[in-house]
Image (tube, rainbow, N blue to C red; front, side, top):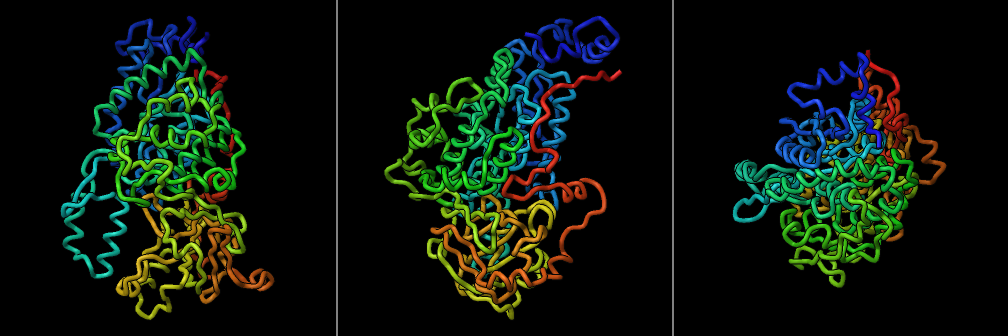
Length: 570
């Protein structure tokens, strides 16, 4: 088998000399003769705190690659810290995917180990790997350990939202809130709730891109380094087997990813990421597939924000393999993994060790808790809701819209004591979609009006064209398509319009006659707040980004270009 890297290193001409000589730096001559070159795409960054430990993980991968006869080459790639970058990490997911794809294609490498953790890093790496289509495998960075405050465990993200609302309600002092800060993040690793980072790690394993049993291993656990070492060895073997993403990521793989997403009570953000990854592979995946496949799947994992426990509890209780074993009959048995074996073949020895954390199929946390896809006059192209994180009494609701034209308008007015709002109102926020913000930020789980919090209200129906943190909870209808900035009906809703939600019948409607809604001009205040960048990535993004129902990728990035590079550099 001819290695791809031989196109750079083999031969006696000037170009081969240049490629070898500049890489020698103490390496033996046989490093460039028949030994697989493995790129370790590393998203470690001090500004991505959840990924800061990945350099240590990379060293274990290197050890495994060396042991198997390969040459490991660490490749720093764009890193997106969910808690740090403004206006939203989602704005740069496609850029990170594009930059990673181009660097993988441009360099003399034969295979890839992808190191990610924080929310957008695993999706962007998977999108890149799908488009360049070299043998690739993911090592998720793992969740942090559980911190405690006042003797109780803290779920990072989820308890930020909860505690901040208690401060606004006057039931928690600002000093106590500040004291919880140092306890929230106990160790290295990403969020310990079933947020987007945990969800995407588990979903990547169900998809077949992670060695089964690895996703969800806590970041400080030495077994993560052991798994990284083994993955480095596997990466070398994948090249010999020519096991590329296109050879095993099929529609069956995405079926299993959707089942896993529902069974773990995963983040709605996984929908937009899986759609984007499928788009890179040419897999025909639609929004309706998530409802058709996942909506009847029971939620088995009792984990925040839908339940009680945290990610290190899930690992202790048996992890994803134990969950998938309970729903094995719902999985597609034909879907393969990076190991070359079917996913279902890895589930034989996967008992549940704690039935409080992972519920048996006969006693689910939620009988049918998968993500529901809604349509109606407010979202003709679709919208999502996560019933497991919503209040049951609000899953069928009708109330007056209280409309906010931008996130700035929301922050300026939500706590105004004169705001005309009550517990039955429906909070509507627009201008937060891919084009409008730009980047589709995590603002859909709007904080409730202070005066209602003081009355004891803790949930309301909320509707938005943006996203919600996977760590968040509440009766939130999000990812509304088309977004307001793309001409969707959301731009023409007015305060006082009646909005009806009926999750059972998959409807979200504004009760305004169709002709009247069509006659209305979009809100001038909303239009004024839409993003209008003049240059750079933001301009490119707004001109080319697609809507959430197809993954919010850029139109010219959908699909793949393979790994071939025909022209020399000198």
